[in-house]
Image (cartoon, rainbow, N blue to C red):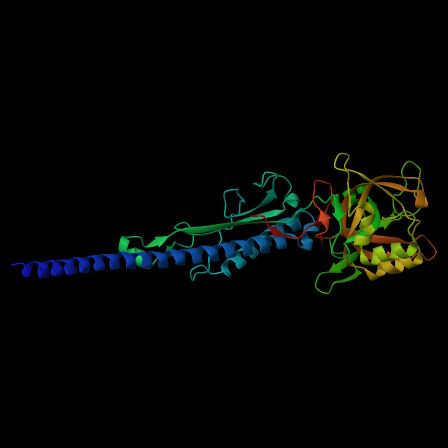
Length: 387
């Protein structure tokens, strides 16, 4: 009898181990199945984020097109083009093998999947106010029952879970309201020219200047003829303030006092450099309290300066906007209140007269610009993902 009992216990244990092995195998297979489906969903989620990022970035860059300078009708057209751009970049980034459609949100409701607006100080989007002030694009890419269909699963179907919904969001922003410039890696877009802010407001309102020259976006050239964008004299127009004429036509001394013509010519041709800004501690900006910056004038323009201006014809540059100017020549003091993006359209050499430079608004993207709340126009930092 004693020889039988051990053999029976061995057979019992072997049977129990087989049951446990089978149970653990089922659990292991379930874990593997869960891991496969979870990994697939993580991949799809990453693909959705790539699609959202690409669509938001592309649409935001499209908003910085030159049409931004051409008035409300052109801006409305530009926003439609930015919608199309977002949709194309969304569809180009497949999610789990499917090209996702983007809800275009034609009414630009804040709850939509594609929203144009302005990033507020609290990090929220607002679609109120002038569309020209909008500087952000929100994109939501989804695969759910509402749009594009949920992502199909593999092994989870055995548990009755056939699919799962995913979504991803992104916000792309370009900062504006430029209040100054800080030390760049290379030259900035900033040149030592000042324009009356009233002249600038007039041209934006369509009540100043004239439309005599055309900028060709494809060939990057300037030619005679109207293009729908007005030009205004950068100088020597409306320099008189209370009967006092500065006499230097709006050229500024940026850097140490009494810079010579070679410095002015270099700054016009190449932009204000890090060495120039080092005189101000690396940053030349409006006072945060008064919103102004007093700058001295240079000695004035010469034939060489006109020749230098000719070399940057059509190139987007940033000029200073001033409110008041007093005294004359190198003793001039300009009260700077903002910055403007322009391109030189025509250089009228001095010849028998004082000469003149004519400019029209242009989009400038310069990452050395310091964003803020100044009344600056068409000067921006590059587009970044803010979410």
